[in-house]
Length: 321
Ligand SMILES: Nc1nc2c(ncn2[C@@H]2O[C@H](COP(=O)(O)OP(=O)(O)OP(=O)(O)O)[C@@H](O)[C@H]2O)c(=O)[nH]1
Ligand SMILES: [Mg+2]
Image 1: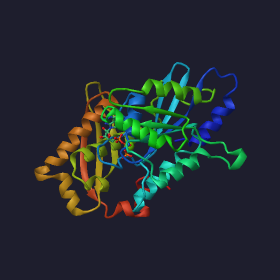
Image 2: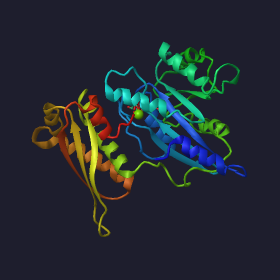
Image 3: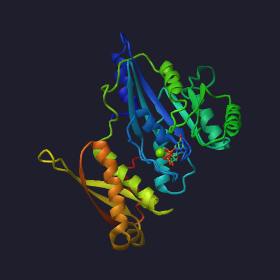
């Protein structure tokens, strides 16, 4: 995958006579704020894993939306928190690195007021690129999410508490469920994107590969099916992907669900293999929607002790520094 900076440098070099606008928009915020749900709504495809459990996203997930002469490159990120073990540290690094080179950062909130740490980060971002007189500043949009489930009075109080920071280029009340605010957000973002050629084909939705996306959907199924703690110990790798040889045949995907302890392996498999079958069924349905055809999904479970706390395992699984 190209880094944002490399891609943007290429884009800028080709700019000039461009009649198009294109640019990068980061979605950042606390875990569970609704970033991945919004990314999927903006792109119109279930690219990013979503779950009611916090800390679902672990990687930078780009999703594209091309509309007429505008190309939005949205970047979903892991939720920002105080890391307490190595995987969480990697997730924070990934989220902050995803802000490099973006044109706009959307700060998503589903909570009432900023913490000191959040305020500090946002102030830093708002003056990104310099200090004093040459401060460039990253345009920050405040997105109050889940507006369909928050009473209007509460949303208004939330808006004024966050508004007091006086850092915002714009503010929106949004619901990824009803679509409230999405068109308004897109219009405001468009005006902030540089006039330059598209970075990707107009039909492209992401530059992530299908193996990665499929593994994420199996992991999402694990979040749905497994109790409180186990999903945090789950990593999924696709080991084999076989396209159908003939029309009417199924795609074959073999994937491994890694956990950290023998007891977790038992939980993932479940009595008589029932849990794993249900994870497989959910994962298959999501992946079939993504690839647009029938799938045979084979899962197995392996223990990799304490992988979420070990540097070498994290690197092996692609959680890069
Ligand atoms: N009612 C309602 N629920 C929402 C909305 N957006 C997200 N949710 C729910 O909020 C929960 C968290 O959503 P995610 O999109 O996974 O949140 P996230 O910010 O990506 O979370 P992390 O990846 O953990 O940082 C899920 O249960 C979503 O279904 C919304 O607009 N309305
Ligand atoms: Mg997410």
